[in-house]
Length: 188
Image (cartoon, rainbow, N blue to C red; front, top):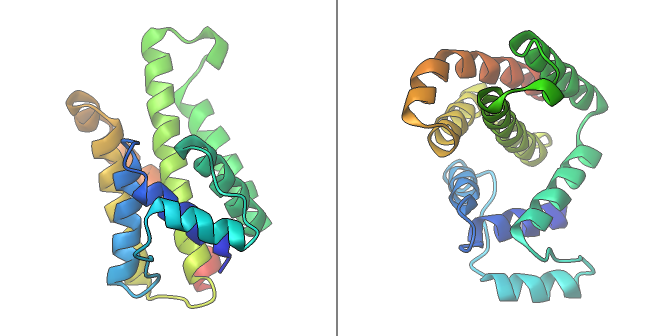
């Protein structure tokens, strides 16, 4: 496992100044419960010192950590997964939005942004799971449990009550498709 990914995920989980840190705490909690990864007891200041001593450039902010994590995940993820992920996103966008982004009205822009936020969070979490388990593969049930947990948390985090009611089934379908992309490389 890449040490920088460990530092970034722990930074994201322990970064209490950001509202989305609970999402990463949940990922680490799941990993701990399923013996995938145990986070350190260190606070962010100590993590920063350790990272710098190890030659790792520590993130300046939550957004910087996300950017660095996404780049690391992409550089360490199978190219076929990356390509499939891009094609899926293009298909989802083109089948659900008949106009180009530049021509969206306010409501379409809002729906587009929340859908993209859901997919970005889902794929990031699935890639994190993939990174941590590709050399120590867990049972498919653990992977499905993780995916369902992430799916439920993203829905709560991103969508309002009305959107949840309207989109729950479609988002579950999207999650299932992305789940199968990563499962193909973890379990076959």
